[in-house]
Image 1: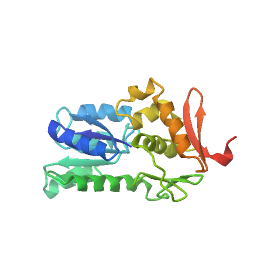
Image 2: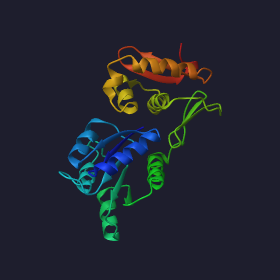
Image 3: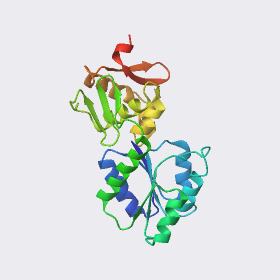
Length: 230
């Protein structure tokens, strides 16, 4: 899962990025609102953590820009705003601008994680909480995969690939999309056979799951129920 962290305090930004990576997130850390806007145009993010006070483009201005309409790139990404501004008027301004949640500094990292999990749940409230392909289930909130109730032993990278495939199933996940969502530096995976190596290991671990990962030559991969494939 890819998360954008926009924070101009270098020390805090690095602490947040390190902590999120330890929890299995892929993190892009940027120091200002203008850079954050460009990243949001290029990448798909599950959540964005945005500081209110940033150079070039404030967090408030960034959120207002993103919420400008459906044609605005990144308009639907859930946003958690971080700020030292803690008056009711400030919280109202941030939420009215389009932020989905608001966390006042200093904060507990555990609370930040809980709020991110809550934001992940919101867009899927009207849907089943788990994605199912064959006998394989993926819970996007807990980030756990199960085969008939059993937890397969997956690495963080394998789990990231599986999540990317299952979120798009039965559509195709391109190699670039997989690289963007699973690796901090997509070039490390996109320009080599790294993705193929991890996919081969993942396929072996999904044996008996009723799901099959297909290679779509020259495009990417998709995961489908095995009974529907040759």
